[in-house]
Image (spheres, rainbow, N blue to C red):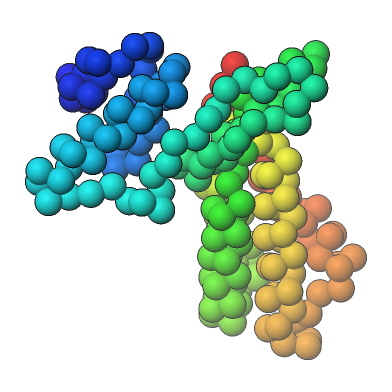
Length: 199
């Protein structure tokens, strides 16, 4: 990909870096004018092959370090994460990431859909083992630096969804919240872990 990128960056004035996964790409330009030139060149190149950029996903975003006293700059989403400017423990602005709101909502919808269909088809322990595996898979993908709060939110809301749907199995097998808490104490859910440290 390096040679292909060079085709679009040979006339750029400052440093350019590309980050790509499948057909999702972020191109970081030190100078805003270079971003415009690359975007124009990409459109022209793709048009030669009857292709085009996804206009809903394609935009030029200013992601410069915020000035002193600023609340932060523009954020952008990539591969299910929102990249934004936050503060270090010492108060200095640093780039951070968190689960994008769109991906978080989509993940919870999938939990709800799964829970609604499986609640009467399997035993409680089998359902719980699968639920823990789903939580673990989410944590492994999104377990990066600075994302602890979003991971805790996902676990909390997904657990509420499971509580709701398990209680729809039958009156005889329903849980009180206290009983459900005791059940979880004996079979604890996975907890957030930083699998990828960004610093």
